[in-house]
Amino acid sequence: MADPMLDMCTLIYPVSFLRLDATKNLEKFRESKGITSDDFTVMKAFHIREQALLEELKKGNMEKQEEYKKVSDKIKSLKETWELSDGDWNIFVHNTDILSLPKRATEIKSDMVINADNIKPLLVAFGGEDYNVSAVESLVKRCGNCTLAYFDDDFAQYDLLGVKSELVYGIFVAKTTKKITVAFRGSVNGSDWIQNFQANAVDFELPETTDPDKKTYGKVHKGFYNYLFERKQEDGKVMPSKADEIMQKLHVLLKDYPGFDVYFTGHSLGGALSTMMAFRAAVDDELSQKTVYNVSFASPFFGDQGVRDEFYRLEGQKKIRHLRISNDDDVVPLIPFMTLFSPPGMAYKHVGLNVRLYPRSSLSPIFKSFRFFYPKPGDWVNSISNAIHNNLLLGITFKALPNHLCPEYRARLDDAEVGLSKKFLEVLYEDEDIVGRLPELTSPETSVPALTVGPESSVPAITDGPGDKSED
Image (cartoon, rainbow, N blue to C red; front, side, top):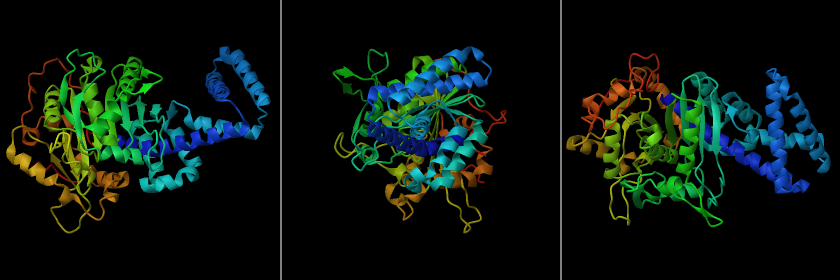
């Protein structure tokens, strides 16, 4: 479960960098040729249609031959109108194809290898070219040739001020494993970090739901909430929030792929966003008969005790399962630990089942590569223990930044492969020594089928990781 999720979290970074580079190249190309924006949009549409028709012809669908010829003739006319040479057209096609969707994992790998030099400076902080290519190779191995169906990076500007920056996410569809996964990108620019440090809290309302009472589900980090749920105005019209858009896309995909499980994942800022979005999906009427899965990496705090209590309720009804993975000496999962002003002194709380990964050590023969933690309801001893482990000062080290990045998470997850391969998420959730007794676990409000991976399945719930179970 965790391995392909980490691969997707890793890929979100280079894919967003590639798309940004291609977008800039196309805009520079358009301006240099004096092509209007409307005509450029038409040019893109005809090229994309030509490629789709070509694929149909390769499959033997000769009924598309006449349309293919008409589209090709139109492209030839456009090239003549704008005096585009074959070399010009190749530049246009190359960058347009980078932006085209859907895109198979093998095609993402090809884009990365071919264009690595263009984004190499951006990849340095995220593991480098080799690590990112290995992530897409791993994804192909674990999930078959899964497809990136959607990618939202509108206004994704990577400057220090984060001008016009919005959250970035992709939606993957894996037919072999029957999973639809929404993956959120972590922090890369000034705007992202501004949101990270806006520690004030707001009511956790879901404005896009049909609930007339507009129930409040506790309080959450204001910056994270705005990223997902804020509805902005454009030309006097209220636009859908990102959460609105994601749910609409999921509803469409689930009609195309009935029976597929829904997963949310993300690294760093993306981890917090993934959990908030998983919560939103878990209370969605159209997904009420599914268990929503969330696998987050290096997630900061995002909600208060009220959110945790609501999470308990959804976990008890088997509407949500959250695997929160963190490195022991990663400082980001320890912040922000409280609000400063609004409201003053509110403590943030983590939710879900925490798998804490430890670095390699040759000093202790009883070294454990991982441990499980869970905020047991009503267990004050457990609460004190978790508070110690979540102490910010104890988490600050000279390697805090490297320990936060995806390559270190991959290394530790691989180290824990043997032990974690024997752990199944639903079995862990049913172990009262770990999670205590969840509210309504034995009497959910609605009939929810058990869609989780169990020990009778050949598919590991967490990963294939050395180590043994150690609860807190």
